[in-house]
Image 1 (tube, rainbow, N blue to C red):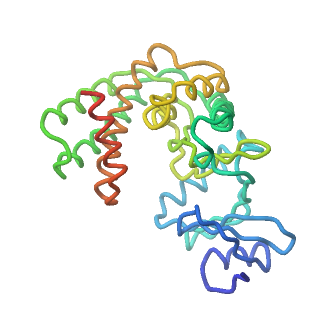
Image 2: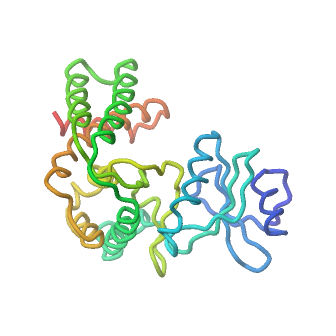
Image 3: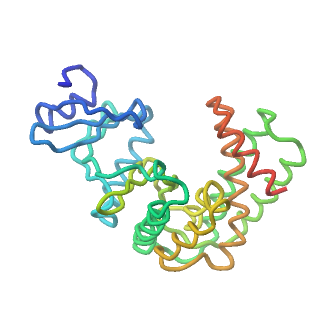
Length: 278
């Protein structure tokens, strides 16, 4: 249908593109809209609720988008007053919609490894303790939230703090990380596309593997193999050991977010990962 409302996303699109139509996109969250210009090109308009998330995603496209040319949307327009971005739309199907165990799923993980390897190599820095210390500080905040909400008992809090201490004294390679790198943010088309850069920042390189490890790979190790074949090298011994501590972060954040958002599936995931650690 023709877009004529006063929605900030549509206003930005009108300013940048002229007349647009809203395209059906049932998998997109409410704050994201797919639009079609008169010439048939598709775009994504996204309005952030918070200034810091808007600034983070805007900065990610400006600072690191060049390392992902051909695999990431391009920034077309912005409205700082309403925290709104207009981006080119990638073609393809979301990777979390392919059949589990299919060749398409394995290929998606291989290509996702290749793309992430490109970003990590372009932005890598040698080992340093500052990354681990910053991680431990942020992790402690999640532990405190979980304890305050009575989501963990005293033994579980002690275990999570043990992993926070490990992270705080570890030296890790850093790179610009996506930090929500999983199939729901990949598109399978002529080439693999990735999107949703609002969490992107410099962090421990291994952290981009943790969500896949605890949400996908433990149940399907062939996907881990395919991913690192594309990435170019497997995690080193230190990174493999650190993955357990990153699992502790995964558990704590899933428990807290699941509780805050009344998401029973996410809460159950956090509980499952935490039980594996104990």
